[in-house]
Length: 133
Image (tube, rainbow, N blue to C red; front, side):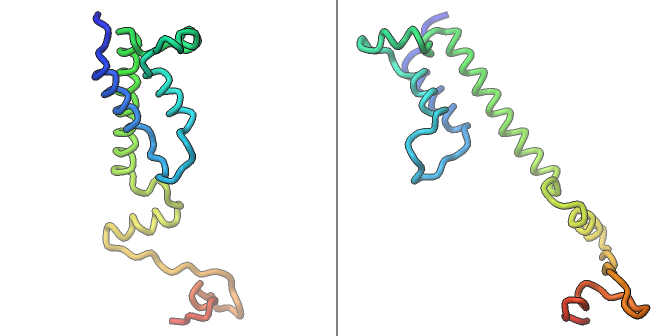
């Protein structure tokens, strides 16, 4: 395999950054993950030869292929989360709310819930709050 070109590495780096969660515009300097990615993708210079042994660079074909696999994994994870949210819209809801919305889908309204008894009569939540009918 040939050594990846700087253009290929730059594209790979940018694609990896796009797949990471967005950060606020006025956030502090780069997150540790962003710093680590940048270190890996930087072109080694003559002054940084001592640090290149401690941190492997993405300059070999195997390292570039591995970075592409990470990119594919991140894309697949994003797609998975998108599909989960699309086809399971009630995932973050409470059970009562999910049941109510499911009943509404088929044209039914759930009966009003009665809580407590006072003098033989049951009151709805709205009546207890003074809203009445």
